[in-house]
Figure 1 (tube, rainbow over the protein chains, first blue to last red):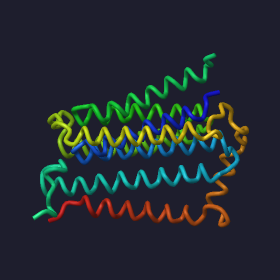
Figure 2 (figure 1 turned 120 degrees about the vertical axis):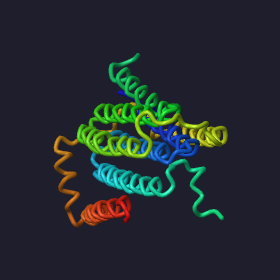
Figure 3 (figure 1 turned 30 degrees about the vertical axis):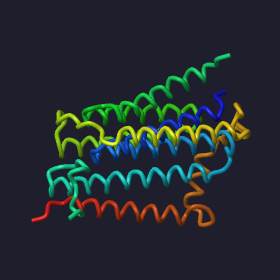
Length: 102
Length: 169
């Protein structure tokens, strides 16, 4: 079998790459993609823990389902917001979005 | 000794991490979205390897069928598939440093927990695990309340996203 730590290290790597995408990308949609990668890493961790340590505990799987629900909601609302901002300012580049600065 | 499972794991892990690196490295946003879909496929494969085929199916339906398509559509609406190349990454060095420090911290934490080093699962997956999960989701003593809250959240998202994105006269 594959050791549990391999899965955990893989999710840590995926999470770090997603974090880098959120911080370094200057485009709102690109940042959203980084967020989705991070949520994927969390789900992978949860499923790995469920399989290796608590195969009879239903809480892990239920939590994964709720993370999926929240991820889908976040993507839908986030993209709607990006669309609204784009209509207003013709850009989705965060350095040009300074509505609140004066 | 390398087993078949470890080879399959390495393949899917490579797909996942390669896709993720593509997301951060692609200069065009549309290419980044395609790399993201590859990464989602890799995670779905890992779910199958972890004997959670239901979650592999959910991954395909929700992430690739829902989120990825939504993101691709947003890219098309805002800048078009062959949109301009991304400008240089600002703060890239700082962001890379933070992410790398985070990764090292997590990795050091992971390899120092003896219980997580085991190579074999502690038990078999229950054959009717999916049925148990479905029951637990609608059982008042288990997850009924979060389940209903999730339903309300989805309704609010449906209405809210329409309201935010609609054309104002």
